[in-house]
Image 1: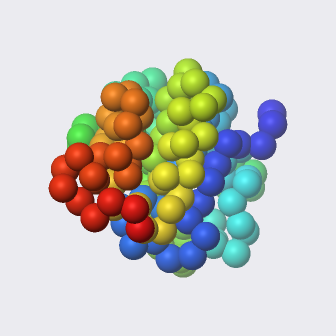
Image 2 (image 1 turned 90 degrees about the vertical axis):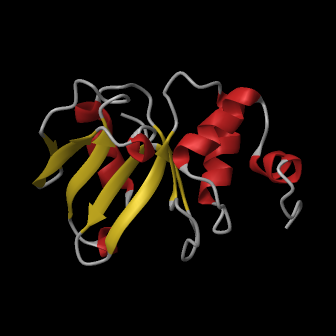
Image 3 (image 1 turned 180 degrees about the vertical axis):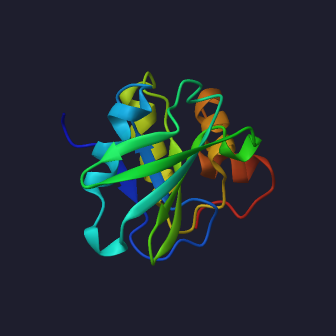
Length: 150
């Protein structure tokens, strides 16, 4: 399987997201091992992920990754609806926007970039809602009276 479509925040994130992941299909048991295998081994062993039941209704309770098993926790939380929380051994956890597999490439590229911006203030559901409405985060801040360009 090809490398995952993934973009992580280059340094420390100051927002609700640490990057974005654009899986190729909605089969978590196929996509998760590829995601885990692409992450820096220095982050430690990924032991658990939390995903939204709306995005992954058929997710298994465990997924085999290279050399270990990952526990999959399903959440009904609205914040988890379009996100995956990756528990990374000794480093802590990463919160990633999950871009729907059928999202057009142009929109997905914008979402990958926006979610990995360390200054991004938007949650996963908010970023996806803006993408669906045709706005990007900067346009939304300006229309809501925000600071505009950073």
